[in-house]
Every structure is written in structure tokens, then in C-alpha cells.
Length: 398
Image (cartoon, rainbow, N blue to C red):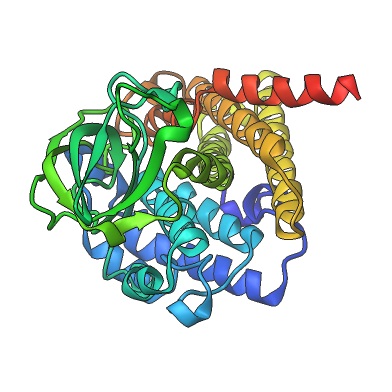
């Protein structure tokens, strides 16, 4: 069963795309078909990050999708970016998470809060793929409670001296720019979230060390590392925005990042559904394709329905964001629903494959492993429910 015969809402996203959106989606799909999908399984087995993808994606403009054209970006709105991201995620979630983090966090933060000099120095190279961006918020003892970070920066003349470490850094092995949240208050007078500032770090700074690469369950071709800072001297002009505003900047950017995670999750779920639908039409039991059995048809129907619902929620939220609407709660809803959809759909896909779904010869076990982390990173499902619950409670008081 060709994926071209699947319902448009499953394979193509929104029913009616603009000419520009259709062209970018087709570019993303063609890129994925040529440079990603044929190699994804081997990259996963080897935990291999393919560095040539950085330049190739940069050459297409896919590393500056949300940046203004004056910085060599494409100047696109959220909707088009998310449509392209889903296409890449359907081919390999590891490539998609690199693309998502780069576009949603460091580049957006630099564009929003950077000085003219900082933008001139970093944004165009990031957009062209000459530099890969990373984001550093979490620490070993500060995950969901991100305001509890302990990495410390102390003024020394015009510079800052930084000590501490950051955990779970996506693309940390190859990143040329890392936007890091670091404490600039003093331990004797802590200011909690108001004591956190954002810094632009580069690996050439003395004292910047890349630690071990995590051996992960899924998204194994996306390197996740610890970064350690040992008396790292950071020039004063690397402070991003206002001192003490780093935590707020990070939370604002994570709103956009969560939409990217939702698109990734939808791409993973879509790939699992497409594989399950094709297999169900090929696999015969009792002399007939298993797709003719009502039990399998019901699974496929529920998979398709959940994917379509998750995508509709994401596109509605992206459209609102592009109109300037505050979508902080809605972005959490998208991330929550899409990630749990991906986990559910990939589980059902394995069930459709039966025993073959449990072995690496077939693709759905990889989709299952990749899906799990979408319920965890950039805010666990539990944190998303807290965010949504607070907003709902406040609205109920009005």
C-alpha cells in the first residue's frame, strides 16, 4: 500500500496548503527520501550523528526557517515550519529533533533578545548551517524544576567566570553556539528564577568541555551530552538580553519548542501508522490480509483519528500564534496530546505487526522507542498538565 493512497489528512497535513507551503513540504519530503530515510535505521543502530546534514539543511534554508531574511533566514511563519518538521520527523525523529531545537530555541532567542552585534555575528552562520545551535537549561538535579539550576556565573571585570554543568544537551557534540541558562545571583542572596541569565557560549571558550554521550533508548542518532564549565571565562558581550531575565526568555522559547515537539510526535505517529497500514494489507492470516479483519481495521481507524486530531490541534495553535495570540497553554496541550498520541499509535503499530513488530528488521520498534522521549523532553506530560491546569483554574475564577 503506497502512502500516496492514504487520506490527505494523514499524509499531507492540512487539506489546503499555500503554494509556498506545498513547495517547502515537497522539498522537505524529497530531502528526507534522499538523505535521511534510507540511512535512518543504520544511524540508529550505530548511534551515529551524520554531520553532513547540517550543511545540507542549511543550504536549503531549513536551519533558518523562522529567521528574518536579513540574516539569511527564510522568514517563515510557524505553520510552514511545523509542516516541514513533520516531514523530516516521519523519516527520522533524530534529525527532526536537531532541526527543532536549532530553530525553536537558540535562533529564536538570539533573534528576540540579541544585540545588533550579536545578531550580526551569529544568526546568519546559524541560518546557513555553518554553526549548529543548542540549548542548555536542565542540570542533573534540575529537570522539571528548572529554576533550581546551580551552574554559576561570577563577574570578574568585564567578563564572567562560569562553573558548573548542564545535562541532556541535544546536538551538544557538534553545536557551535549554545544558549545556556546560568545563575548570576549569589548563593548568599538567591533570587530563584529571577537570578538566572542567558549566555551565548561557544566551544572555543577555555573551560568549555563536552562530556559523555548518553546511550539512549530512542533518537539514538541525535547526540545528547553533558556540558561542563570549569572556570570558563565568558566575555561580557556574551550576556543575552538583560541580566536576570534568562529564565523568562527560556520559558517563552519553550512555548515555541513544544509546538516543534508536537510536530515531531505527529511525524513519528504518522510513520508508524503508514507502516502498519501497509503491512496489514500485505500480511495474510487464515488466507486473507489482516487488514480485512475488523479488529485490525479498528486499530487503524483509531490511529488515523488520533493523528488527525493531534495535527488539527497543532495547526490551529500555530495559526493563532502566527496571528500574535498568546498560546502558552495551547502549546502545552499540543505537546501533551501529540506525544501521548505518538506513544499510543506506535504501541498499536507494533501490535499490528505482531512478533515482527518486536524485532529490528521492521521499523515500528524504532518508532516506538523514538516516541517515548516526546512525553519527556521540553517538559514532561506531568508538567504540561500543571501548566494547562493552572490556566484552566485561572479562567474558571473569572
